[in-house]
Image 1 (cartoon, rainbow, N blue to C red):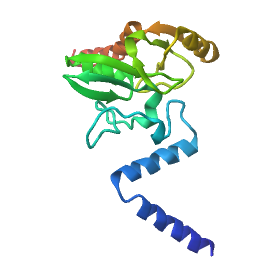
Image 2 (cartoon, rainbow, N blue to C red):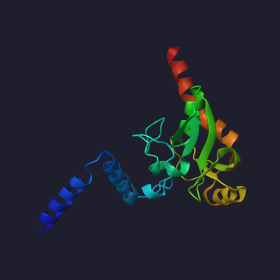
Image 3 (cartoon, rainbow, N blue to C red):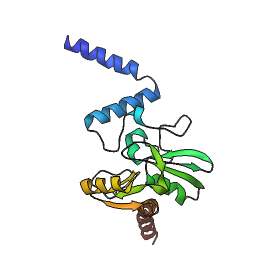
Image 4 (cartoon, rainbow, N blue to C red):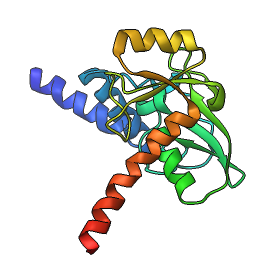
Length: 182
């Protein structure tokens, strides 16, 4: 009887996950059950601003946006709305010389996109980062950021300072490449 139930469950899983998006949803749900990552939200709580077949993935690295939602950024890149899993991926696109305007970030508390330049970031908290060893979470108000920093560590910064921290991530690999060339 137990085997029959298991076989039926597996068949139901296979049938239920026949589409690409359903499979991604299943993987996301499985990761959420294993141990909720701080930066993750359920699929129905994530605002996906970009369009197209790969709309659920970071336009730079391909990571699943809801899985890293609390660090999501969005911007117009060369006039097209584009979404990123993190400020790291946004900085990478900027570094490549793309025209980036209208930058938004997810507010960690409300889960809504807000203007990145008016946000307050907590950099280096005990909460895991996305695409970087140094976490970067944004808040609508300075008071919310200070409360988060008091509870989780980190330093409160504005967007321009946080972007500079993210850009430093790219200096390390460049130094290694230069050393290898020599």
